[in-house]
Image (cartoon, rainbow, N blue to C red; front, side):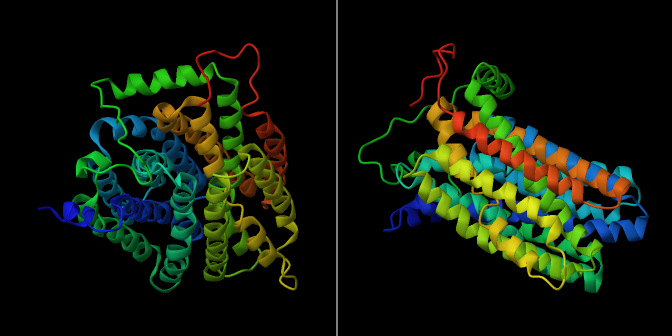
Length: 428
């Protein structure tokens, strides 16, 4: 008897073990994605690369993270969750390790941009959405909220440690540390991860009767993914979801996740202290995103998104005025913004499932995440360029805040169907 089957016979439903493994993988991937924020200034000093050049590599990383997501969803359906996760973690470990040998900016773009971006694109929010839809019939919003919060927890766990390693031993020690962590989790995933409840003769958590699972069909994952995009393009709701998530990415991963630490350093705040600030934000985001998942099971998700984007926009407009060391502005920002960092994900997943149905939700959400990361890539590159040209991040923060206020208005239209909308896109 395998260890997984033995554990499946215990009182705890195995779905919680699968969710825990997924959380761990997402946490490590989040730590890897957050690492560039502590590398920007050290790479500037060692190689003389401009912030715009380094931001270009990070932008490519974020872009691929998003664009690979929809195809990763199709691959997860065809190849299986366990095999895909093992491959992605191995790719990340190798790619991150090789960055210690780079000596030219094109190598940074290739390794951190293309290789690491591809690996993190496979282990992304789409993975969490698929796991939740397969393994849970109840508590989906709550579980997805916890899985989504892994991004914040990844920063909480890794950023202060990585910043301390950079300060004491150099940036290469930090990079090697995160690569080893990714490598260490692979045996655990290979041993315990399972693709579906039926693999262990189980029902999804909370299911009162047997649920007929859709059998994996022998279809081309690329064709399946592109067909899903064609379906989405004909839907107004898809554009509203993608547009708002574009702004979400531009105001989180691309801007704050990439440039807050360099912005703090510009104002005389030490790197370790700045990383600690992001970690504090991670604590509050874990609370906020988990609560958001709980709320998404009970409240109108459009109104939730309205408040999330609106409050985030106000906090970003406040940020440029909060760097005064004699004022607790950054602490106020960390709490206010942290509670809202990625709280948008559970309501967005719920609305995507409502519009496109459970079967298509994974791939469709993958395309919406792609829009999120296009926004993140745009903000990462744009903010880096503005900092290089203007010597300040002021304009980047204000623009991002205004965009969030626009998103707050857009999300109120999601699910309010127009008369001309495609009749095939019936909410479930």
